[in-house]
Each structure stands twice: as C-alpha cells, then as structure tokens.
Length: 100
Image 1 (tube, rainbow, N blue to C red):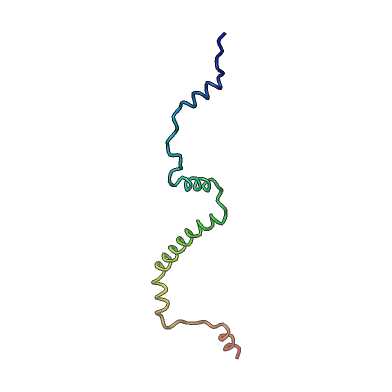
Image 2: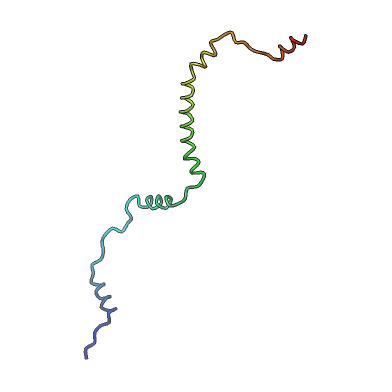
C-alpha cells in the first residue's frame, strides 16, 4: 500500500522551494501623508471650520460692496461738503422766539 503525504506537508514543501522575496517592502514616499489626509477628509466639518472658511469670504464680499457703495455715492458726498450755506432749522430756537 502506498502512503501519500498529507496536503499540508505538500504545501509546506512547496513553500520551502519558492525563492525569497527581495522586493522593497517599505511604504512609498508620502504614503503616511496621504493616509492622514484621507482620514481627515472623512471627518464631518465642525462649525468653527465652516465659520473660518466662510468668514474670510464674507469679509471680501463686504469690502467689495463697501468700495462699490462709496464710489457710487462719492459725488453726492463731495457736493454736500462743498456747500457753505446750510440752513439749520432749530425747532427749540423757533419756539423760544415765538414764545417771547
């Protein structure tokens, strides 16, 4: 009767015959950075992060609107400062003058 080796012993014998793996097993450059960036990208943005992101945009938009408003109304503002005779109506002085 012939005895055949067990499948496990045949697998181990075949594994011993495979040449050693000489490839470089180190991670490529920047791998840790990419893994960290992907991990942070999966996180939900917090309120403070959204506030910081949109507040800078809001400051820029408000600045542009301010410059636009001043430039559109500059002529009327300059005209108001050029006139010397401005009539002031003082209701208290009028009432005192009318009462005496």
